[in-house]
Amino acid sequence: MKTSDLQRTFGCLLSMEESEPLLAAAAQPRRVIGHAAWSGPFPESTVVEDFRRRLKYYFMNPCQKYRARGRKPWKLMLQILKIAIITVQLVSFGLSNEMMVTFKEENLMTFRHLFLKGYKDNWQGSHAIYSQADLYDHIYYLISRYSHLQNLTVGNLAYERVGGTFTPLTVCKVLYRKSNVDPGNDTFDIDPHVEKGLSVWKIFFQVPSNLFTHTNFYLDFKRLLSVNVYLTLKTVNLQTVRHHELPDCYDFHITIIFDNRAHSGKIKVDVKNQVRIYECRDWNVEGNSGKIDYLLVLFDAVVIVACFTSLILCSRSVIKGIQLQFEFSRFYHTFYNKVVSLSDRLEFVNGWYILIIASDVLTMAGSVMKIGIQTKFQSNYDICSILLGTATMLSWVGVIRYLGFFKKYNILILTLRAAFPNVIRFCCCVAMIYLGYCFCGWIVLGPYHDKHHQKDKESVSQLHIFIAECRDQPESGKYQTDVEPSTCCVSPCGCYG
Image 1: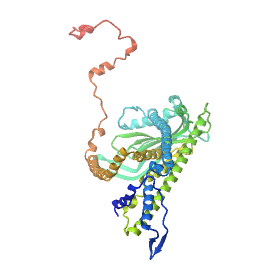
Image 2: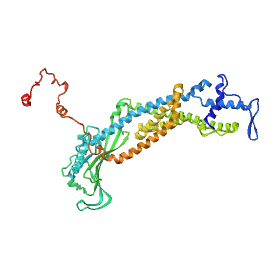
Image 3: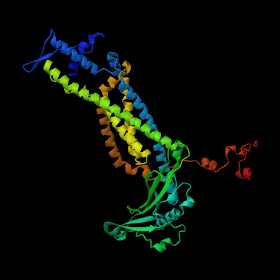
């Protein structure tokens, strides 16, 4: 059965008057030799007309159903309300997530400045060292800065305590088990199995100058793969108070890596940071931050209730559509002895309801995680942001369905639906071309790109360099003079003495 058959089935309804009742009295069937026979003057016509009305009513939009039966579009109003509240929820969570991410990034930058010797913000590549003395010097510098952290940092950083004892700084050496390399004779003898050695330093508030001599700290650079320094710091994110949220406590598990795996003469230095966010043990904030925090949890609970109600209503509509699809298949086979095609069967499955159900499930999962974050039971901001962001996107995409209730927008939506398969095919072709170019460019051109060889350089003229050395600000008053310098001098010595 084609779509035209389904449309032909609804054709008689076009001539129906507005005053005609929606549901006619169904004739009583009687079974004859396995088929339905009907009593009455025009039995089959009455049953067909009745079923056509049911189908037409099912495919009406909420506005048409309201005009037909006076049925208020509760589902439509719920969807509009849900879009509003989940958007507000996403904005609220986005602000908190932005503060958390900014705080983590700024602390990571702080650790680089505190513990890496000679670190500069404008570096485009990784920090690197090139001599044995520099590596020893960097490790000694790191331990010294860590020991004097309280006198250096401007933030709220503190050492971690376990059982009343400061957590020590740990240095881990990663080496080949055996490595004898003689480039002059073109020979080498290597055992690629990896060995690790740990050195633990407690916090010294006065670091001795002969620290490495006393600890017998030695590095075999022929075998050395990397040196990893582990340390833990604690802090409190106080900026959330300005947004009426309770501050969180943070544990920063910092790893400073001196990477020598390439054995190219360049040891790359990197800082990695793993963060644990949890509720502070004892806190006191003047004001109503705690009350507002509970209000946010209550708002999230309202969002969950609204989404659960929407999920139930949309699921019920989908189930009704599937049941009506089976009923239509049996009806059409009985009266017309034809089989309904798959495309006509899919007409009964409303894709917008499937979209709303997916959005509701994601919103409820994200809201539960958001409540867990606010109550400090968990701190997985990334997954929560993905769930809430995707759910909000699907909800706003669903607004297109409501635009279809207007005739002008309905034509556009029907055009988009008809062109969608061709657009997908076009995108697949473009994606194949793009992927082919990416792989080719990555392998052939990537290693020779400028970013692998030099830093970004800004072209600055000698004139701008000369002017930049002037430190006088415009409001300093030094520019307020009526004396004009002479412009007729030829010799610099004559003009400026």
